Image (spheres, rainbow, N blue to C red):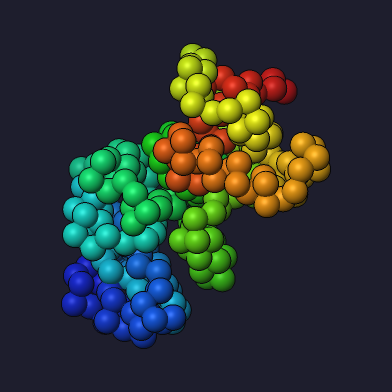
Length: 246
């Protein structure tokens, strides 16, 4: 299997995925320092008609450069890479020149379920994580979920993950950052961090689900967040929600 490291490779935007759904294909960059792994992911993703692999990178610095050139929708990002690791690269991708509706969403690739670097990656701006032994179908699903603007992890899983790392790496409370939110929006953020879905929040607050969706959207917009995963991170980092000790 070849390694599509340049935009001229057939899987880098000129293949079948490039014309899917009138240009609505998901543009992807794969970053991993192992060539076989990198090429393997790229090859798998290129089999999907709604995906276009627009580049691959062997380290974080190269990933940032390619993303700035190609403006992908999703980046599969390994954590441990030379030159610049995946956490620093993720933080770089969240800088002002890439922020906005067209900014890439980062999907962290990790070897262990509770890798010690996962929390730092999420805090840096990643939208979720996958184990490296993920099945092809799960990989495809994850990319589509992330590209659609949703958090990859189920709310309860996200809550457990962030709570564990917030407990291990406590941040000083800074609730002043939440001052732009209304009391109801603050409550919605708290419930998001507790792992409730939109329907569950609607029941808890005695409002319609569409109302909850509106509140969630406003929370993300006011705080400059990209998705629900980042909202959960923010709730813990600001001290709005305090992790329960086991």
